[in-house]
Image (cartoon, rainbow, N blue to C red; front, top):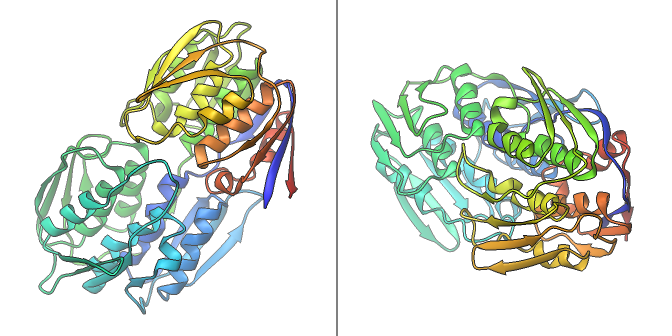
Amino acid sequence: MDKFVVDGPVKLNGTIQAGGSKNCALPVVFAALLAEGKHKLRNVPRLADMEFCQRILVHFGCPVDQSFKNNFACDWTIDATNVTTSEAPYDYVRKMRASFFCLGPLMARTGRARVSLPGGCAIGARPIDLHLMALEKLGATIEQKSGYVEARHTNGLKGAHIVFPVVSVGATENAIMAATLAKGTTILENAAAEPEVAGLIHALRSMGAQIKGEGTSRVEIQGVDSLKPMDFTIPPDRIEVATYLFGAQLTGGDVTIEGANPADLELPLQLLEDSGATVERSPNKIRVIGSDVIKPVDITTKPYPGFPTDLQAQWMTLMTQASGNCTITEKIFENRFMHVPELARMGAHLKINGSSVSVKGEPGKLHGAPVMATDLRASASLVLAGLVAEGRTEVKRIYHLDRGYEAMEQKLRTLGAKVERETE
């Protein structure tokens, strides 16, 4: 099992390229199941989660050809001419929750789908009831038995008016994909407005889907009889971009990320400025220059355009080095503070109060220690902590990290960090 060995403190300085968005690529690769033919996807990130996607697509009878451009992103050609099975077994789905995205496309194209209940990071309950509610509204018959969801339709899916009681990115995306082949118009209310949802909509439009309303809470889909293969470039990963930009402010460095989209990170960038950082925005580039003093800034996680839950742990690490106290409140997941005891092992002064954490900022007080990664974003927060801590930090179980950050150690070394991957 691999671990990261981080020697600090260091200042991050330099320029790196933004990777492709994991959270956009995951639904997009399964959207390929909606249409026969060869689909072209560019800028697909090289991540463990994408490897799982490839295996599942091959299991469905859809071979994937990969063309590697560099050490990071690659291009995919997915041949979805034939779908030979509509079942996604437990051994595949248990490893990655996002594989549940195959449910809507499989059912829409083949008339049935049998998909194992999903797995994923242990960051709290992420029920699938909204996915199933949306598909039932579209005319699917749903059964849950023996750990599987079985969905089918006999006379085709039909457009529907679907109101989500709470915002759900995954349910919004599954509903949009299924509705592209439904008869009539589907309207989604209280839909997720995240950039990753907009990316999926753009990919579906390249297939001939008729969708409008991306970036808003109301999405309208006019069903079509058939779709064509997509030709789509995965947009930059805003969570990866923000993680490295937080690192610039954390370490007092100067980091530029090319290929990044500032519009996707409006609130996090504003909060970085509130903390004292200098932020320079360009249409396809973001630069952050760290300040001598980090100011404490409270955050509360919310659906987009609010502060992303996927950046909460990284912001907490940043706030351990602030000159003063702040509060971090988690409103999306109920079990997303597992990094708190690990940061405390490094000397952070943190106190959990229900859905909030009180952070007592103490610049320069973190020290290297062996810590355990518990989920994807917690892993990133511990690596960031290692960059500013005095001495050596060992971050164990970084297979979590490999699910969402392509070659993080290489990118950090490009910025001057002392980070090595070792096998225990």
